[in-house]
Amino acid sequence: SSEMTQDPAVSVALGQTVRITCQGDSLRSYYASWYQQKPGQAPVLVLYGTNNRPSGIPDRFSGSSSGNTASLTITGAQAEDEADYYCNSRDSSGRHWVFGGGTKLTVL
Amino acid sequence: QVQLQESGPGLVKPSQTLSLTCTVSGGSIRSDNYYWSWIRQPAGKGLEWIGRIFTSGSTNYNPSLKSRVSLSLDTSKNQFSLKLTSVTAADTAVYYCARAYSNYETNWFDPWGQGTLVTVSS
Image (cartoon, rainbow over all chains, first blue to last red; front, side):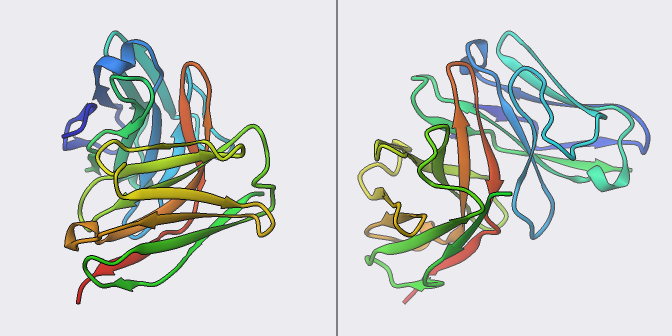
């Protein structure tokens, strides 16, 4: 079982805002990173650190953290945002890295 | 920019050793800023971190795989490798290599290789 928990599936209407969350005790001490994975493709980093986007990631993607929960927010979701999203951070020891179970985002 | 490419056998027999190599281009594997990592994904399932290696050769592994996994670097070829012993069908997955960055407050993986499917079957 994962030490970080994500909702298995979330849906959002085209153009609306959606929040994808990741819960885990280690998130009280460490920031999560977030990955987007489309079918048949490798994951792509979309957010890291406090709220940083790699070059090429649209600014509709943003991140936040509070307590044991990290969030990825997509403001104005587009059809191309439909994908699986994974969070990553540390385990409870702080020494090992761990992924959340993933959230399948459907854009309606 | 840095690119990573996995290579190795696509089929491994049960109880044997899975061996994969990741070739790094566009940058040096000897950079002190980065770790080099392996991640896997069984079909239809989520991502599982396998382990990481630093340029010094120091390693850290997923506790659930630690007894069977080893990572190594070949700086002369700008490659790093994964060995997973005593494989079973449960080790069938797409295996990704990735460059990783880590500091006191966070870590991330970027870029990733395209992934390679390894099937464990007799």
